[in-house]
Image 1 (spheres, rainbow, N blue to C red):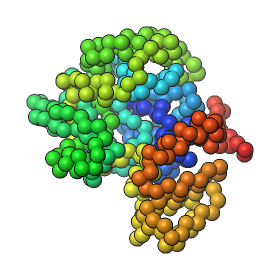
Image 2: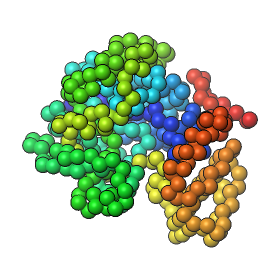
Image 3: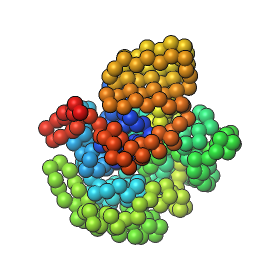
Image 4: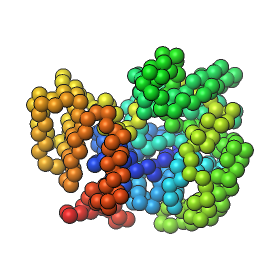
Length: 373
């Protein structure tokens, strides 16, 4: 493959389901969840390869200095594009595509969330290469994950026929959004894939499709790109124009409406690190099913994720639980309580509680400091 791919890494999400470690000013993708590097840094490392151009990172003002720190920590440079406010993934992806189309008429774009766990980078790159032919033909490619269990927190993709000249890409028959358990089991047994949220396309092809399906979004994004202002090492999208873009996900805006969608089944292990249950499942566990990190002592505990960022944490006589301890907050939640954690985080924000909004580590252009209060 001679044509290099432009990675676009989305890193603007708040990660509220991983409270209290993930906070609104320093979210999960910027925090080491497993190993020495954050999910964002691991994403950068996966695309640090000759098959890729330098990445374009789309984030927001609050995370900009942490983004710079993370990129420096793994020695990867690239463009950092800042949204004036979050408008969901549709405008973010379209803005990156418009920027890259102006740079390269033939640009092939690979969109990657920054919170995925993919332990085999070589297998990841091999699967991406398998999607290039479909993207070059004008398809909007997503990558399908073979389900390992009937997960209700992911979307599913049903497939149609093989696409001529683009093997192993398949046409998309439909998208099913976060099904109930019984339907998820049926979809899994029928050969449907999890929707990974990773996409690849020719920038020009996406712009053409968006002009037909989302003309208001495209107009707003074009105006925002034309009004980009340089600020230090950042590119700020035009604020007034970008706010006119409808707030809608890329799946709902484009993928579910276009007849040009394709799916490439992948061969690599994958997890969306969006919940404490997902972190637990991907962590090394002992004979009792427990995963621990930090200063912890467990007695008669099973199937638990216990993590302490500070004080000694002792857990006894309990199972199927997540215990997360930081310097200023403690979470004890049953596995499966993801929705409740998100609700609690929203309540803390409404009440103006620091514990819901701010991490003690604060990033600045010259580095970072930790607040003691």
